[in-house]
Length: 563
Image (cartoon, rainbow, N blue to C red; front, top):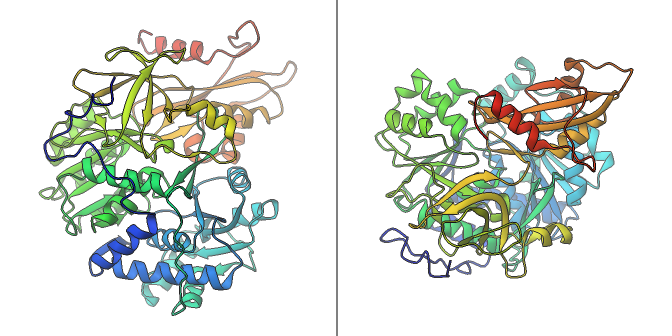
């Protein structure tokens, strides 16, 4: 496929190129947008709305606190472990303005997962929710973290409401286990310390790292993808050009149920929608459907970003179906494959089609998307502007258009590499800058791309990557386990569910309950298995490598599917 293959594949009015150097860094985007849209709402959550002007002021207060009350220096890593709360953009943009590298951390991580990520990133500071502080207390002595900032759910609300909600979360719902971190600073105290002080806005060059976004990559050890300012700015411009082509500046309301610590939601809501001055409604807990639908009923929303599991759950809710969808003009899906039945049902309920896109953490993340005016269900659309795809065979040779092989991606959004792992980087990015996705696909004649299969052993649970190696390593630590393997099996609800196969050591006994408990204690929710099967032996190669594929095929046959 030549460089020019996609030039004429873009809808009228959408340019095939963006200028990734239009802004030097994320700070420049933030400053411009917050000045241009100062009075416009930026983020809402729990009934509180923050304008762009307020966001700039509060992120400045946090930046000043970091600069004047800690010894943190530009380039140091700060772990941010927060759900979708207004605090998230304040902290993240404040940290960036102080020149720190943000390490997005899932708030549902177990202590084991936190310890690995904090140490691998070399984090020196942590901002976390009080609900997770007991885990931080356990982990911190084993890490290099020196500064801890703690926030409670309702910290950004007016005093009375704040006290009330925080008390309910703590005492009624019992969601804040006891912890002791005597040196930790409360976020509101940190903001008060920074208030009115001058911020030395740091202006990093475009190739400096902005975010360390952890992913298992193809092998299962969580690696930090180094996303530079240029990567994220480029992807923001790409998203705005293709995904937001029918969205107007400063007047749209977008629902944000996907976690902002996930790069997809971060790039779209905190970057692309900030550039256009739009209003993001942060949903803290999308699993609580009644509360989410109640939130939705308050807004005439025009955009919705979700994934298959969530679309299904909402369409099955009577209260959701009663909402006003007259303003809805764009629904975006990513993170996991969109099922045809789901897309049809959503269109039927809301009147708005779903645009499916595709991307990876390593591509900041959006690599392709269906243009709003020309959706082809079952495809992942066309490359976003300034992006190329090609298909290669197992030997790494380019294949002709229409042939099936591994999808490779090239564009300004492709990461700099994996943090402190040059070998792992060299495995996935070649000398010309092509990134190997690990997904098997085909490029159609019209430029649209279809994913056929996955090369990797990775399991995709509701949009989250789960790596069998990690699950097997954890399970192998349970006394009595001789051999084990984890695979993904089809699941109507989450796309895939995790199934474990276990061979018990001779003379020992293990129960399903013991296995489940061990996994529960060491892994966050989406990584926990749904089922366990005990076997006398597992299929292996002649050198003893367990054949996951064989077990997967076996499960498919059970379902009556052909290979």
